Amino acid sequence: MGFSIWHFFQGLWSLTLDEPKIVAVRILLIALGFLLIYLGYRKTLEPLLMIPMGIGMLGVNGGVLVWEAARTGNLFVNPLVSDPIELMNALQINFLQPVYNFTFGNGLIACLVFMGIGAITDLDFLLARPLMSMMLAIAAEFGTIVTLPIGVAAGLTPHEAASIAIIGGADGPMVLYGSLMLAKHLFVPITVVAYIYLSLCYAGYPYLIKLLIPKELRGIQMDLKAIPRVSTGEKFAFAIVACGVLCLLFPVAAPLFACFFVGVAIKEAEVTRLVEFLSGPLLYGSTFFLGFVLGALLSAEIILDTKVLLLVGLGMLALLLSGIGGLIGGLIYYKLSHKKVNPLIGIAGVSCVPTTAKVAQKCAFEANKWAMILPYAMGPNVAGVITTAIITGIYVSGISFFG
Amino acid sequence: MSLKRKLWLVGIALAICGVVFTRVMSQTIDQPSIQLIIYLIGICLALTGLIVIFFAMSRR
Image (tube, rainbow over the protein chains, first blue to last red):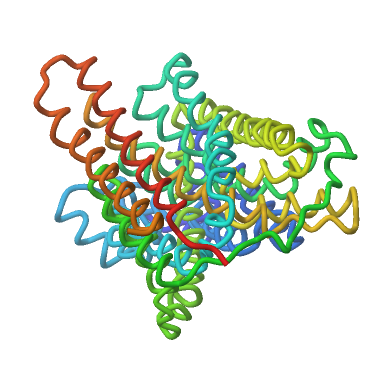
């Protein structure tokens, strides 16, 4: 291979070497990267995730190199390496390869995020109204349950359909873990789609709420003095029992349960320094690498899978149906409580802690500036994390067991 | 025994029964449909146990 002017501009040269389809998708992904960074900066999407994810996408699709024999590649990460010798080479060359292989490939990153979520979860709100919280959380899993058969009917395998259906639970680490366990070949598009949609929840759900719930119901005030507190000892005991039972029930999802409840247990045991570590550096560090590596994994070759368009549609359907299910659950509870419960708390059952609870509060505040429902909304919100983990456990264990 | 302790014990007993149904009983049956039913009953029992424990917690 002789020297040419192209050697100085490898990024442009690589565009002439690959298939036109790949080049077009690569340019599209670079543009999408810019868009995510901009929307993250403007706080339209969640900046914690979208800025690192956008820069990852921009970097991996823009930084394409030309290797020997006009082969293209990058210095970020190669998720498709499986041969041990090639993997050892990749670990020494690609700077994100160790992060991918040692934290993504085995689901560790989802577990680390879950430890942090456990450490910031306050069970008080859930235990204050346990039945209401659990029922609303179950109603808000409507999308998670219904999207599975829809996905199978649309041509996905049960494993793939279950992975995309978990988006309905609106819990990013759970989607990552579930897709790694059930459909590893699709985990990148599924998780990226999930995180983009979860970031859109804050902007999108208020429209759904205004469409389904009349203004006079959105402004209902709830009695904040009626929220009881539970002793830390009992919450600690509950966390240990729940962890044991759920791990015994769903061994495949046991790492997730163990990590979530270790966070809860440490918080309830009041081990302040560990709580600070789990809820600060660990949670934010893991979330940063989650976004950055996911962005870097989103190369043109991964996106060109024919199923990706279907996943985009099904992911949105799952979240939409879960939101509708949660709001219908809220309306049912409004009737059952003799019009004392604000139906907006139903949307908080779509876990996405604490975004959906904040959405409920924001919409209530818009309708009535005295309507404070956030503490009540946190109950279904926390219950949503647990129900999503249980449904993920059922999908991972059940489909693997019977499939 | 106080109602609170009774509820804790009932909850834990239900949860253990659920685990036994899901992990042990479902494995002893060959017919997949019955196996699935026992598996799901076990999960429901265990989760009911956890909900019973919710109500065992004293509130102030």
